[in-house]
Image 1 (cartoon, rainbow, N blue to C red):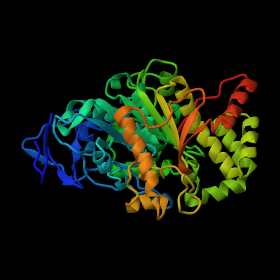
Image 2 (image 1 turned 90 degrees about the vertical axis):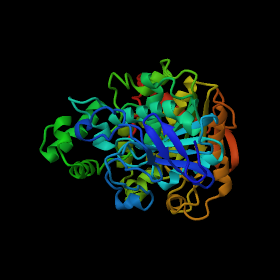
Image 3 (image 1 turned 180 degrees about the vertical axis):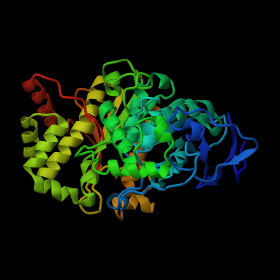
Image 4 (image 1 turned 120 degrees about the horizontal axis):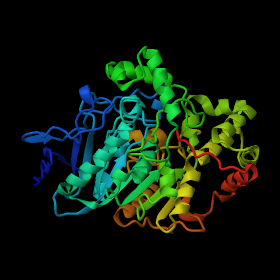
Length: 498
């Protein structure tokens, strides 16, 4: 039932009272599983305790424990911190809160390298999707050591299990908010896209979604030994055994300090210790990319995948890394070759196409981590995959069309100060109309408005003049990798995203 001032909706665990804002109903901070602390710390999620009466859902709920961004990154990226134990909560924006609407649903998984971010980031305001006829759901999930620590005495991938539980909540509850549980699109950016890819391949998630959007993140599994080393380094600093039982006895703030210390040298371009989704024999029975490309996982699911033209600039510009990589020159190029497991011919080919060591390294690593696996996934599913590139350069110095810049356009939230942190002043509204509109159309019908992937490799380009479709714009670069594999007589290792 709804009242114009305070809409009230019943869920399986109790009723919630939202607010009407900008003409849509908003419900914030709804718990979808129980708080993951005390005896539930480092354990799989369990349903929340039902509540009596009507729970107020007017404010964002607590965010998952996380270290703050460094000063260099904080000038570009906002990351609100809201204290509290009940951090596994979600938000719903809907134009029609009631069981008869049966509107398409978009479920948003935030990015942040699986260590930062939340659904409370102002750029992720779902009201624009609700304004345009969708029900938008955004979620919090466990991060860092709490969500992706690898222990001998606890199941892996707790954060991914949280996301799976949120999708199950959507299936059970979203009809009461006006959504259609049979028309769910799961979408994410960066680590959220990697998570969406893992959910596409997860046996337990089959039937919980119809479509998926992967923005700046490809399906992957991290090396278990690398994640285990991250845990062991933290355990060494904390002087405790590398077990879930020992970690569960440590204060949260102390854990976060150790995590930030161990992970301070991690970078998508340079590598370093980091958390990631791992093959666990359960939710992730095999590498998600292989399951989607070579297996039968998520057959019939519509896919939309995209990247930004200069992803790497957000990883290198803060803190002056761009200039340092340029100064390193041949040393940086050798490091990129090792990072991407490719031969000298690939590096020389990229060097001829790009200006400077930093741009060469950045584009090489971006292709290895993002574009090549997305091409591979699209090649495996022609006719149901749509690919795009975001090419509009930020008005701020040196950022170009960097990682995460597109989000203010996806959510049509460019008028927020947080969007302007990356875009600068005067971002074009017509570009937001084009990109946001494509996401809305895809969630509604599965067709964002350009040709599906086929042998001609159509890529929709946003931000380089009027939106247009280019054909095979990266094929020349990717041919270098194919030739490299042939010359070396071995298949390149799969990309590992950090």
